[in-house]
Image 1 (spheres, rainbow, N blue to C red):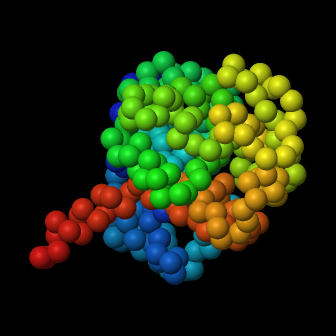
Image 2 (spheres, rainbow, N blue to C red):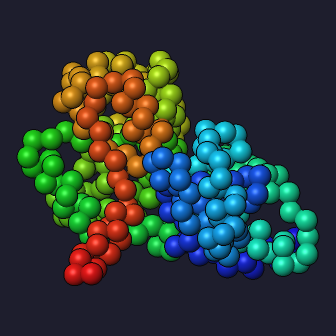
Image 3 (tube, rainbow, N blue to C red):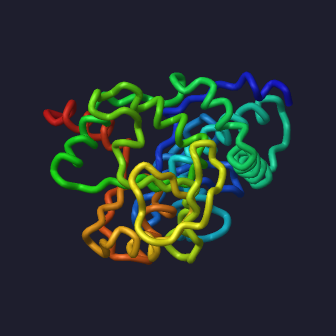
Length: 286
């Protein structure tokens, strides 16, 4: 219905670590033992008695297809939309097929990624969507000054990568004429997790995103590469194993697959920790 365009989007509603019950339309938090704590149906918190009846009388198996995990940043808007739409349809008196609604949301968000419609909106309004951190450029400069070699490996295509990175680094430090000068190697459209598992070739592309040739041998600073694989990367840079620190924010595409396919050191960005640590600090006396 046209009315869903006017629904409220509350980005603070969901955090990573939640579980969607696709059968009943609930979103809940479970601990490491599978015990369910707080439960929401739509935007309404479930009573303790109802929660006990649904989730505490028998052991639930979170690996079942009945449940979907909210464990990546990409999944957060899916949970927010799901809860808002359940509220919307039920208040209209509609019968909601919870599993079908979840699948529809998932497919639509996948399509928005695939057909570039979402990225077109972001590129046209970068300041509305991308938060500039004034410490980003100085931090990369400190890495470089201490002798580190920096590489960028992203699944995004060249046009989107260039737009976002230009927005983040434009005129940040006078010693760096553009964002690419912060990095020794730039790899776009990396197709993670396939980058860690397959043997896709590296391609060199120009500044317009056109493929120039297949690349072999060492990487050259200032060039742009596309695709590739971890084995070719290590051969090209002459560095292997735990001499590489790989920083990412996707638990599957970055961390899990990198750990299973290599001995690279990994660091995972968990942006929610900032709010968590602030809350702990503010309430330590209690």
